[in-house]
Image (cartoon, rainbow, N blue to C red):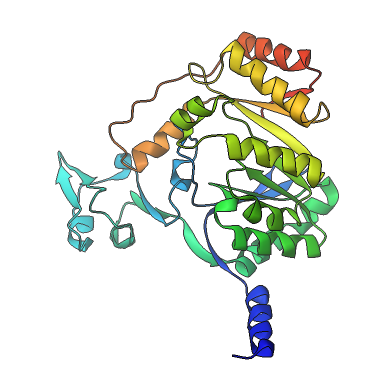
Length: 319
């Protein structure tokens, strides 16, 4: 193949709308950046946070959700499953997730709606059409589009292309990320980002690895590069998980990093843990989970807020 042909193939690849795995396109979102926004939730995440609020986003492939309250025990799902992963136990269906391949045949035949498929394959152009339908809300509220997950950087070509289309349309763009990706992956995506919502889960690398499955060195290094080299506005998102990352030492270390290694101009959003994600684990039929926490009290959140403010940081609760 000559150089001209190679260049033509390269240009065609850039212009072609990539496919991605998406589990929700949420309109009228008000917690993922300024104004009224559309938040696109992508599937697939390299982290396995013990407290994850969107466990349906961890795997990249679509997954079957099961609502046992709706199950009539009719057995149609049993007959439809070629892997024989489903059986009826005490009048309810039960899935062996080790055998299940999430092809969704069981959901297609379920008469009660107990089974549904979470996630779908779509092109970035298809998702942009859904986003564009809400353009009037962005214009009148100062809003825009946020790519979330899962982890948007786990699908970098899809994310980059979609953000590029949004920028070309004049929409404000944001990305909600853990920052866990090689810089060669991060930098091209950030060309089309107006605001970064950056997660800080734990400052100790060993504890971070224990709680999320990965260390935090790459995450912290990328945060500094995004802020200092690319100068993209950033909001720091800090989940508060009692018993896991809310010690005075870790909170102080987090505040010290944001204020000292980044800037006191970065607003901190504290995200108190809420157990609403636990129902999703049940619908994924995840058994043997050993995680327990609770929503921190208002007084405790106020104490933590004061620690961040003591480092000169502005604080918002939630969002």
